[in-house]
Length: 351
Image (cartoon, rainbow, N blue to C red; front, side, top):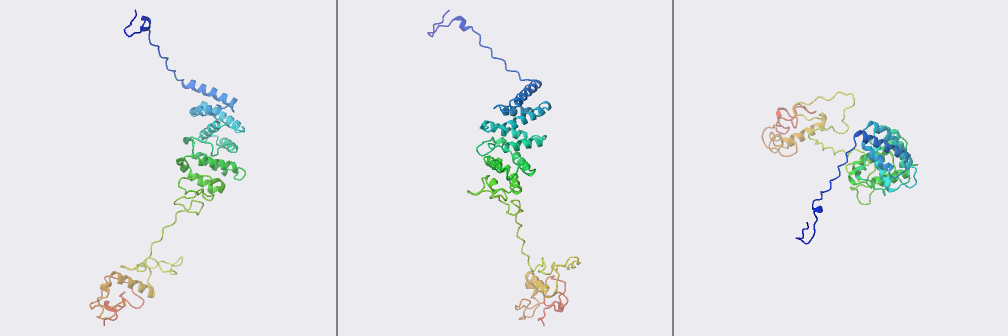
């Protein structure tokens, strides 16, 4: 039967054809199957270490590194691949990128550190390794690279002079990192610059906070490290705050040259409002007079006769002297601790 309503012919067989059945989703491998696949891949990597996909395969299998059956074969295969790639005269940029990822994985391992250090040193010495022309994903721009380089230099696995080209390439590679990752590694870089003075190496690393045209110097690995001083190669303590000014009238600090000698007994504490410095001779008298004049200037002159000079040389008003509970300790010239040392609390010129 034909349906010519819309000008087209449709057969019965076409109208009744069933829709195609979608293919079933692939079943994920079981842990045992996944382990077997990984072990076969590691055997292939060991047999073909310089193949372009060998390093990439190692990075894929690393997801199973916590499997005890995979961990040891993975480390052995990684060693074979790195040693072979380090002998290639011209590794491709893609191969170099996979090598950086591989070393980021290796540096995370808590075992076989001596073997990993040897592999990193061999790759650092390759004339085409690292360098500013190689871009690295931000997630693999890690401080662990800088810290491990410091270990290699500290253990003499790298020589600051013989391996200077390798250090320069490494510094240029770190300089290509994004600002956040560079700042995360800044303290480790400063430690490197202190321990390995090499201005021509560390001056290749810039930080966004630095002034245009400035470069970090070999003494501290930085140019404008705010809050740090030049002393100690960039780790100097901040400048101490200025000491507060000492008011002589309060007697908070002894005059220069009057410090007690070591081993001598401390001076007795003055009683009832006396200042902290020992009172001796004229200086103590002057200090006490200033104190009384400042706190009770009006009361100290109250007992002086009209027209008589007071302790400050001014004419004192009539009335009795009252120092308002001043110093009780005596002066060298007389008892009582009054302004002019006259008895009965009057000034010397009152009578």
